[in-house]
Length: 283
Image 1 (tube, rainbow, N blue to C red):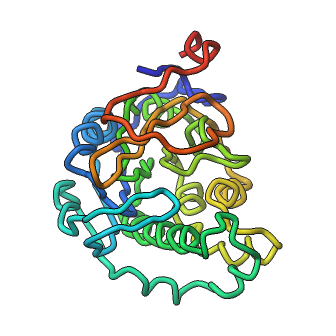
Image 2 (tube, rainbow, N blue to C red):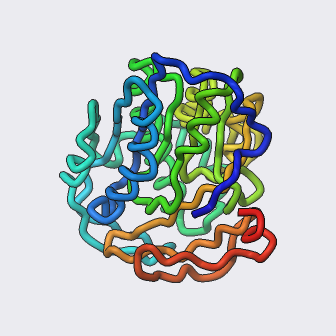
């Protein structure tokens, strides 16, 4: 297991007896039947170990299939699979409608960074909208800490150490993974303490138009870095792999830094690529 403190975060304070933690799920469940055990063991159980109250929130699209030419992913989806999470509050939505809520024409006028006829662009808008809606559900709970978690990720490492740090820290922080940064911040998942950071991370969909109006092409990691401007952002070496709808896992490169180039390799769930020697020694 990868260990080590999040860079620059002090956890010397005491744990609050009334600590509240929210876990926010968003996007597409894909193969939740395979990722749920790790979600429970690595995220939910550690949260329950230190918090007085933990609640789970989610927003999902009613989707029965997926077809992504860029990733090569084609398959069926179970629109009821989200029920496995046993959420405290959930919002469901038909895909497509959310595109009318954002300045799509103006944003697309800046260009398509993925060069796939804006298919990935639209997918990102859907994801950020889903994140926003789930965040709004969680904000009503007034949590001290929020775990933002894609349900289609297989979490290899426990969030326990990082959650304990945040719970004891006197200041607010946004913790993001230190790998696949792509000249921005890894946007796969995050641990956030403080209402301002939660809003900056979780409701950044509202700033897409503002970002593109500055002449930027919408890009997941770079946009996240922009949205978190002014927040205390720290990185953590916590690993998680994408699991496709067919049950195969993407072989990620967890070496801190930009991220891998080239074709994605699909492997059996639980497979972890060896990291660079320097990282392996410090882990």
